[in-house]
Each structure stands twice: as structure tokens, then as C-alpha cells.
Image (cartoon, rainbow, N blue to C red):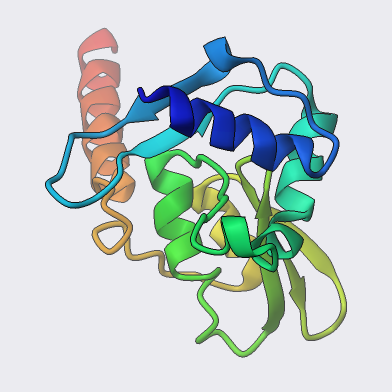
Length: 158
């Protein structure tokens, strides 16, 4: 990774009072012609990480940092759920955001719900979760197979 990029990232963090050491900064993903690689910074404490995420919009107002995007590093599952933006097509939901790898949303009745897994989608009234759309295997089919195997075993045990 270029020395200039490390200095830029340290300057970005420093502009909001966050200290980042060069050894926690890593490039990720493949090299692509004409594009910079994504960079990830590892935080040991939550406070500096949240401070940086909280001030990311303010940082983009600074001319030097206007083309830099700061985002949370989410698991593939949470990224897919977030991509649906907590399924805004469900009219029960009015607001959603991600924090600490979880998706938090406010429903139209002002109740708050945290989504940590596809099972939690039932909390917002989704009775039929499209596992394929989330890039997941259909767990219900796996449960049926597991139940059938359990029934076979119980018959054998009798």
C-alpha cells in the first residue's frame, strides 16, 4: 500500500479526533485497473470507530476528502439485508440504519426492532423470507430433511 494512502487515511481519521496507526490499515479485494483498492481499518475500541462513522458526512464536505466513502464492514448476510434497506417495500417500516453489523429499524407504530439474522425478519412482519434473494440456502428445506431423518430414527428406536 502506498505511503501516501496511509498518510491520507491517518489525516482523515485525525480530522475528527481519531488516531489510527499505520499497521491497522489494510487493502482488500483484487487490484483493478484504473481504480483504487478498498481499504479497511481495524478498530479495537468502538468509540473511535463510531466517531469516524458518525462524522463521515462532515468529512465529505472537506474538499480534500470529498471523493472518499467511509462505510461499515458488514458480513455478506447483513450486507444483503441492508441492501434491501430492511425491505422498505414493507409499509410497516419508516426508518433503517446499520450499526455494529446489525440493522436497526423503526416501524410506523414507533416501535424499534433490531435485525441480526434472517429469523429476525419475522419481527417486522415478514412471514415469508426469500432466502434465495438474500443469497442463502432455504433453511426450511433443511429443517424438513432434518425432521424426516429424526422421524426415521425414532421409528428405528421403537
